[in-house]
Structures are given as C-alpha cells and as structure tokens.
Image 1 (tube, rainbow, N blue to C red):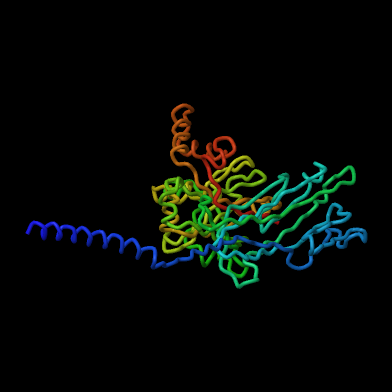
Image 2: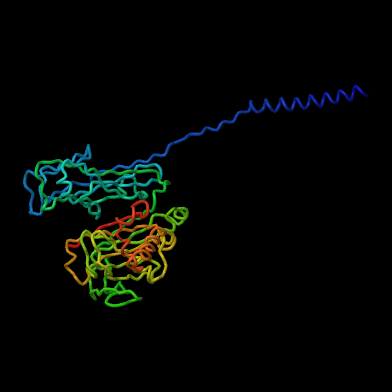
Length: 404
C-alpha cells in the first residue's frame, strides 16, 4: 500500500509536468500573426493664380512699356514698369490634396527694396485692405469639403499704386502669397469665417430693420439721429468655426465677444451707420443705429458692449457665441453726414477680450481717474494703448470696407 501511494503521487507529478510541457509547446507551435500596416496621413495644399492677371490704369489706358507676365511654372507674376495710377488684379485659388482633415492659413508678405514704394502700395486681399504694412495673415480655418481637384477657396487680390505715390528711383518689389496647412485636430485658437452679402441680398433699411435707434434717449442711452431711409452699402455674416465642446476647455471660454469698428480717419458722432443682428436677438430682427461717440483713428468702437450688452444687461461670452448664437450679421451705411464718409476705410473685427483684465482697467479708470463707466469703457477702446494682441485681446476675424 505504501508503494502504491508513492506511485500515485509520482503520476500526479508527472501529469502536472506533462500539462506544463504540453502547454508551452502548443504556444510556440501554433503561430498567429497580425501585420500592422501604418499609412501616414498627408497634409497637402496647392495654390495657383486662377486666370490671367489684369492691368488697369486710372488714366484710362496703360503705357505700352507696362506689362504683366505670369509664369505658370514658377507661379510668379512679374509687373514691369508699374507707374502711379496702375492697378493689378488677380485671383488665387487653393486646392486640397490632403488625405486627412486639415486646416489652412493664408499669408501675404512684402519683400521690398525701397521704403517709398512699400509705403505707397495699397493691397486688397479679399476685402481686407493693407497699406504701410509688410506682412498680414489670416487665422487658421478648417478646409471645407470640395470636389477632388476643384478649389475650396479663392481669394481676389489687387495691388494698386495711388496717384500720389512718389518713388525717387527705379526699384523692385516682391509680394509673396503663401498657404500653410496643418492637420485638422490642432486647436489654433478662436476662428470664424466671413461671408459677404451679395448686393442683391443687402437688407433694406425700411423693410428689414425693425428696430432703429436714433434721435433721442432710448433705454437711457443717447443715440444720435439717423436718416429715416438709408442704403446699406455692405454687410457680412461672421460665423464661428469652434464647437461648444471645443470652447468648453478653451482659455477663451469666459472672454467677452465683441465687434469693434476702426477707421483710418476720424469719425464724428452720427457719421457712421451700423446694423447688426444675431439669431437669438428679437427673433432675428436687425438693429440699426449710428455711432454714439466720436471715433478717432487710434480708437475702436465696440458694437455689442456699447449696445446689446447694455440693453440685455449681460456680457456676451465666447461660450455663448459657440453654444447659442453661432452667427452674427452686421453691416454699414452712412449717417446724417452723408458724403463725409467718402474716402474713409473702416475695419470690422470680431474679437475676444479678456474680461477680467478689461474689468480691472475699467475699475482703475473709475476709481483713480474719476471717469464714469461709459467714459472708462470708451477710453479702453484705445486698443493699442491698453491691450496686447494675442494676450489680452484676440482677433477672431476681420473685414474692411471703403466708402466711395
């Protein structure tokens, strides 16, 4: 009996060893492979001059020596013997050849050999007028879907040399238009697209603008008088490209969102007419008013904080924009002064302002300099004096219009 018990124990041990050896052998004998193939996503955009550049002159015709030559191979436009009064018009189209979602930025840079010419040229890029500046760029914007090979974005560009431009010697200038594309999941900060109203779709002041502020005190605000019947000259739709989910964790979540109007010349009270609406304001009605304060060429006029914010008693934050409002419409017309706006260029910008910083500025001006709240609010709209772009104020997008 003793021997049998020992044998049984040995069998058990052998059985365990057999299972262990068998399991180990099976693991290596039965092989299953998974091949991991990695294909890298490609971000690729291509820009080209769409059509032939055109040359025109305020004199009614160009001198024979002035020429515009476009080389498709190098994507280069040569303007030869340009003189004051000449204007070059062309369009640049951009095609997306990426295999993944992407976003893009356009930039314009002047490489100049003569400061006189640099200061003299007027460049219009899709309605944004550049003068006395060597570089400008847009915010990054998502690349929309487009038919393969077809442009998803076309921007008209004009380069004009005003009649008063004086250049003392022969010079050369190069203007470089570039497109930068990056992958689509990188957050590049607040973004909005701007769509321009076609002329036939501009709102009619009599029929479409149901709330008109002018000629007296309304909601305890002194509004300058405005004409009863005016013509809206330009209007735009600003639409945020950020989602509610994106802005939820953004540093800009509680920043104040505002339109600011700037001008290259001084504007007196009531000269500039403004209209605006967004989809949750009075069932989409337009609000029309004239500028309630003078506007120097160093100052900005806040549209929302000086009107809708006062009327509603709440600050409009970027989170509200992305979650509730999404799109703004705004436009311009002439106030009572009429022709006094001729030759003036205004810039309409959608911006975000650091609310804590702005409230601190206002409180300091009220307490230490004895200003009223309205005076302090007007004072801090000297943007270049009180704010730093990219830190305490953030540009979302902007457009320009010149009164003729």
